[in-house]
Length: 115
Length: 113
Image 1 (cartoon, rainbow over the protein chains, first blue to last red):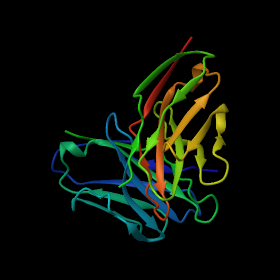
Image 2: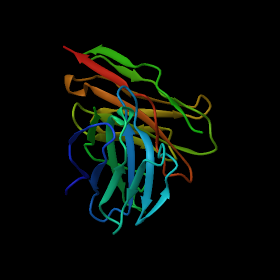
Image 3: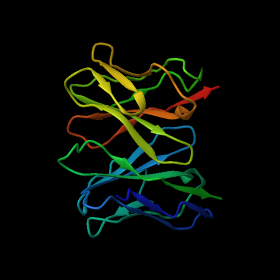
């Protein structure tokens, strides 16, 4: 079946602009995660949704970052007033609660470049 | 807070040689351990995981890992590598009761002919 998809695959924006990154999880997966991978680093946790609600947003770096999942499926990560330090690959993952539920399936990522 | 240390940032090996990629994590009461692989321009793919039970875990593509609680290690091994194993490998830990994966910085495995 279809895996996790993320759009766009690449996004170039100017410093100070607003961006939205989209994640389509695997159908039926109730848990959704966002991670950020900077160059030469491993992915870092940002936020976790169970259904429509953010169960853990402890990884969001500051209030410029916000994520939603209004219908419990697609999620959007929103970044306001982008800074050059926000440049990274943003990864989305989903998992099916209750069946091997610790396995997170990752999408290909969105590469964000802030100029 | 949990942390994961991957001791080698790059590991070059020749084809058909054995390889070990090292991973240590900070101690906790209960943890779940994972190895992910990332091929160039692709997403992360799960190689194997340890949740409980046997400390030797077998994964896809001939990889295996051994959970060592006393040494807080979860090293990844393969007895004979192929060119196609060239990729970046990430060790990750998930603390019991949490849904937050904590990753190491990764090890770039390069298999040369």
